[in-house]
Image (cartoon, rainbow, N blue to C red):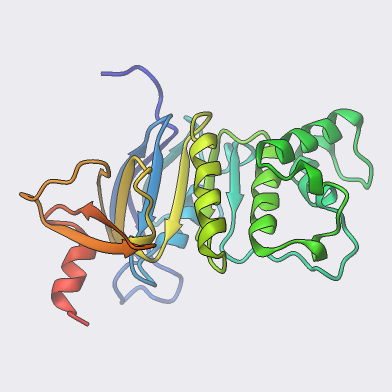
Length: 263
């Protein structure tokens, strides 16, 4: 057994939103670990609790029961170590901010509040832009960027905070297929440095390059992505003309939902 500490440990998490005590929990006894080198695809239908789980990992929501540790710390203590790209990150394109200005927002927690950044902060921001392949856009305004470029800038902002784990909530929504492939290449390269959790509502979106599939529909089941075994219950999806298969265990909550609701 490896002595390397998991990047995240989620143990028996149950969560209901306030005022919904008589309804089913959004998350029901969810348990899993994220390894230090993992690349997790968190999938499930709309309303299955994916974004809620991310918010709990960020310390923005507190579970009704269970325990969460991120890098061995509580989510609140570890927040500065987590890079987060939300589902609907708003950048007002009418504000005359440059790409570098946006990325330097990731340094605010390390610089104190104020309009000026030191040379060290600017260097960290430029390094983050270089890692995401958009250093040439540093002086452009955000209004000049395509959707795919904006997503890379948001990832650079997360990297500028010197994150040790990256959480992305449906980052390719609205991105065309060629840009999506390039985006996955970027994430694959970043995964060589730290663990990544990528959320999608569509199982067919999950890349074959991911190491773990976490299927969430109130309950969660994890399994490895690479192996395709006909002896297991499988689901097939077509992406860009190429058939990709994701293997699901018998107790996978996503499969159970499809059995209950064939539509």
